[in-house]
Image (cartoon, rainbow, N blue to C red; front, side, top):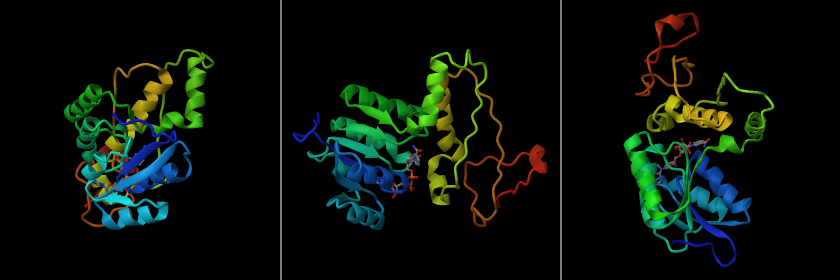
Length: 238
Ligand SMILES: NC(=O)c1ccc[n+]([C@@H]2O[C@H](COP(=O)([O-])OP(=O)(O)OC[C@H]3O[C@@H](n4cnc5c(N)ncnc54)[C@H](O)[C@@H]3O)[C@@H](O)[C@H]2O)c1
């Protein structure tokens, strides 16, 4: 299994240098003295070369497998599209690399089980990118619940918003915005309450600014807009 280098630094490679991968790669290269960014992989060659040039990384590949098996890599940060995560996790675990994987692990429960079994077999460290737990506000709320400051919680209401919609290409491989984002809410519900969720009730509506999605661009997993919600300003996707 990979070990921390003699300098005390962990040698890390990032797979997928899109929106979140660039952020992690930048933090590793410039803000974390305990880490050394040694390699990058992305199927998008221009994005890969731009990120590498910005951060001074010379080991690049458009095939992540060439990165997973490098001897000088201790840990992998998986930031490629969600549909690629579980396969990469299994290969990384087999190669003895520690893993940080962006949420969600996969869209499919059976594939998640396979990936987690590979992690257990190999004994590598594995962390999922549930970053809300490291947000100061969420942490203070969690501490207030744990300390009994707010008493016994009976109702937890979570409202989540993102500042802007993700690109349409991202939505197509993300599993849909509900699956992609609600997973943060499930994580935070468990974190704040300190217990497992027992029942879930859900209602959804497609409320889309027609300027956001071009004509004939309906993502396959968005549910149809319910008629009941018609008093809101709903726009059916073409
Ligand atoms: N924790 C969070 O708050 C957070 C925020 C944003 C994204 N994410 C997660 O991170 C992942 C990536 O999201 P994003 O917004 O950066 O998407 P993105 O589309 O901007 O970037 C994904 C990158 O992965 C690359 N890629 C795709 N398949 C690949 C493969 N087989 N090998 C190597 N590279 C490959 C793409 O070319 C692209 O550059 C998703 O799973 C998403 O849910 C988490």
